[in-house]
Amino acid sequence: MAGGAIKQTDVHAVAGATIFREARLLDSGEWADWVAMYSEDAVYWVPGWLDEYTTTNDPDTQVSLLYHDARRGLEERIARIESRKSITALPLPRTVHQISNLEASETGPDEITCHSVFSVHVYDPRVAKEHLRHGRYAHTLRREGDTWKIARKVITLVNDRVPTVLDFYSI
Amino acid sequence: MNAASQNHAARLREISRLVDDRPSERIFQVDRRIFSDPAVFDAELRHIFEATWNFIGLESQVARPNDFVTTHIGRHPILVMRSADGKVGAFLNTCRHRGTVVCPFKQGRQKFHVCRYHGWAYDSSGRNISVTEEASGQYPPSFSNQNHDLLPVARLGSYRGFLFASLSADVPQLEEFLGDTRAFLDLIIDQSDSGEVEFVPGASTYTFDANWKLQFENGLDYYHFATTHSSYVDILKKRNATAGPDAGFTVEPGGEQEGQGSFSFDYGHAVNWSIKRTQLYGRPLGMDPARLDAVRQRVGSTRAKWMLRQRNLTIFPNLQVIDILSAQVRTWRPLAPDKTEMVSHCLAPVGESAAARTLRIRNYEDFFNASGLASSDDNVMYEFCQTGYDATSAAPTQGYLRGVADIGHGESAHTRELGITPSEWSFGPTSFGGETNFHPGYREWHRLLQHAAGETA
Ligand code: FES
Ligand SMILES: [Fe+2]
Image 1 (cartoon, rainbow over the protein chains, first blue to last red):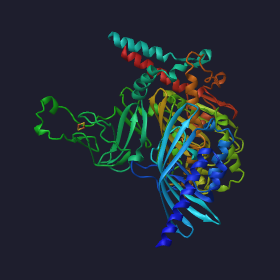
Image 2: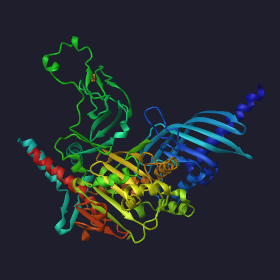
Image 3: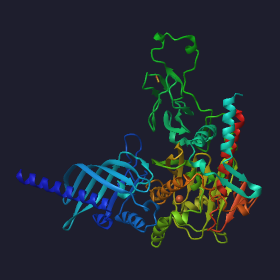
Image 4: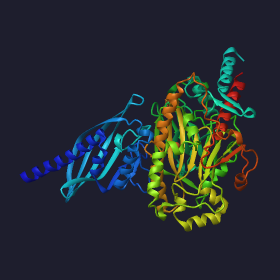
């Protein structure tokens, strides 16, 4: 019993440390460190909405808001912004990720699944406008050697009428 | 004719003059006010969007009896339904009793739509089948004699599954309205062996804080691509270095002259296109040589060649159909002079292979929408334009003249190939980026406002 409780704490601590660190790196623009948290074959998925209640469930036959089935897709997005050529990054909005309601459980050997909710406050200094993105995260973490990597992240964006731009840093 | 309507007509005429179109003097100017003035915006909704044909969806969105989908024409909420006996109808989505939106859902299947307020019910043909407690209602004969059905749009038509509707009956026949844009719809529809297209599930909706005409222009603006999308072009070039046959790259037949051109049509429509030897992206039709051969057999090598060229089609006032690395159908709904809502669908031929479909979806997500690597740059650009247009006292912009010195009339090698007779055409090198293909939209804009002024007076 006692051992199980300690283990449960560990799982929760690993999940919290990973997810909060990810949020901080996104908000501070430390994207090389952020993307390094993902495994090379990580799936990064923001499903679309089919109707009022249902999100898309098959990225190969339905359109997602964002879908990358390897870290490379995220690296391209970072490179585009860092090239200082993308209009969306001239200037970049400032963001604050707030994450709570974290639940985590061990779902396999060296695998943790966590659920959380997010609010991302986005402020666009270009036009002094702000808006809020909110929704749910489902992370799958996998142990690779000594570190825990994000193997899969599914982002359910609740307010899916998107103002102007949606990118990895604003959800 | 009273003073108020005379005044209104005079105002409309004044607004219509904000587009200064003098072909013989080779002058085309657009006053900055048309992007920000609330009076212009109101006139556009009433006398353009709500007075002509609008694209409202695909028939395949309501494939089965009792299927429905909701949309808008101008400010009007619209309910498109297929009746129990299979007929497609389009209705104002507003209850006859006291105006409630009858169907608040995006899409679905329902035999009946019951109004949430007092329970009046309509069937999928729009017929009122119940006035709640009618017998005890102490209604006067004037009520009982009235029809209580949902109000249908004034005109509804379909071209090969593309549904168009008009709130005004004073419009040309749909075939005439579409004219030779049909040849360009055909180039997409005929990529399907069965001649059917569908939306891939997963539409997206986004907004930008700028006038709808920024989107109208941008969809025909070849000139901006290299600049606005340079960060995306960098990514494509990098990817292409390692692209395999699965990427769907195709080649132009030998002897084709590279270049960029456009066709302008009546009623505001235009298409721009390019012929390029080195392509930046592949496309689903190109990834399976056997299937491409079969399509070529069916449609002929000339039309197959055009199917593999970039084509951005605008059907005025609310539709753009893009066939590039994927196919997109996008519509806009003006919400305010400086706010526009876009709805975007991935368009696909029915019957393509699973691999081609997946490539289509990946390419679509990559390029389009607020989350895509190209369209997101456009959206921000519209907002920069809108901010710049606040300089209302500045001279008119100089953005409508590329190509004006050499406008084509009559036949060209390209019109002959396609069997079309556009009102104007343009062609230049791939660095051309002609702007004359914005003119037909503004001419139709002008015509509709003048028409409304004539009617009101
Ligand atoms: S408003 Fe629809 S039943 Fe009263
Ligand atoms: Fe663009």
